[in-house]
Image: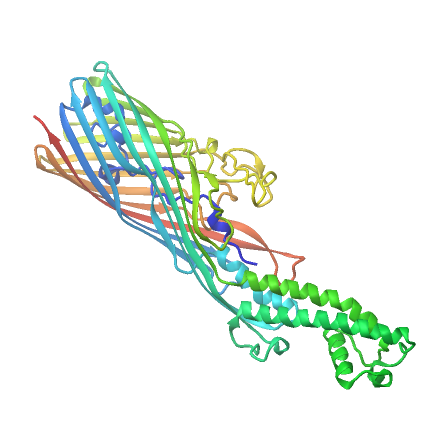
Length: 562
């Protein structure tokens, strides 16, 4: 009746970049959105080979971003009390730090960045996948002949995702034309899930289970528990009474009317009880003989027992559910880069390749009322290989531009998606996003229709010796299929605008400020649900995914040396 199906999926919280990869790694990016050919200290992340072109010295840069994101899911399932579910992501601290030591043609660099995830999402009222099973209860009860018009529940969920990366490496300028760089990133992943569904309430009108079930709101588990108790009693009573009637039939009294049972030794109470049981089965006992009544009681005893078992199952399913689980893992990412300089340095071309990160996360479970976070279970959470291309061009002494492109090889990575034809609840089979498999909704195809990419352009303008202004635009598309998108984890096409500047406080000290707003295209899909009022039919329901993100950033950079 209830499940936490949404939270068993790998559900990273991303801000800029690919589905699982953050590319917002400096205040320089926040204010211009393109840094792939950078020759500044943030080249540690964007253009490692470019660090070999920096002036001699020791560089240090510390940035922080404050990220604010709203994720809204709207589901038109007709039985929901509320069709809009909002998740708030607030990340006041999203730090990056870079250091470079450059001497001669050689540079050595290191950096810290949150390369994936980096925040937590709070859903104060849960998500459609949590509430829809509850919203089905009233219609299901009505279909079973139990008048019920409403439901309520306390639902809350929060999830966090953080992939911290520490990068070290070196770059070498072979000549004025070409520089190369090699790096290695150590990634530490951590996902947390915490939430509950409590106090599920319904308002059945069914005094047969107890006088309190008069149309007022009551705990669903109490109603189902009391129903199971009564139905078990009715099943046992039917079996016992049928056995007693069998003795009367064997003695030749089977043709006696049930209502005249006193003639063969039945008490008024026994006759009334038999009539009630037969009536509860939807039959009229007034014209039945004792032999007919025995046959009916034998037939309805297992029916009452089956209903009692269903009520017990429902009582368990509507009990409070709580989840508190953590997933952790670590891995390494090799990085290679090349930087080319042309036109006496006015034109630069930078290329970087990050290998796929073969990452898995392992469950450490405190509470798992959902049954979906078995202790020690392992889930793939790979980061895809990434190719970036950047072009920098000095238009004049004051104005510079960069063009950048990112290509995420998402289809070759595993994000925790399953092949439904091979998976079992205890042995899930995870697949790459591009494989053609039986997907979790029963359709055949791939979870991603293509690889994700970003395209952007940014500008910097030296207003004077003390102030540099910058602005940029970035487009991103991640190519999800309908099945990839769920209320818990979805990815959207986006357009971003960035603006900011650098205050040159001293020759070697810079203060950078930036703001980025990301505007996501809505995505809607049709989800098919069994109709609780008529389980033989399906309901086609629209589900809409929306998102907005704002990033504010500040950074300080300092160079030691001449």
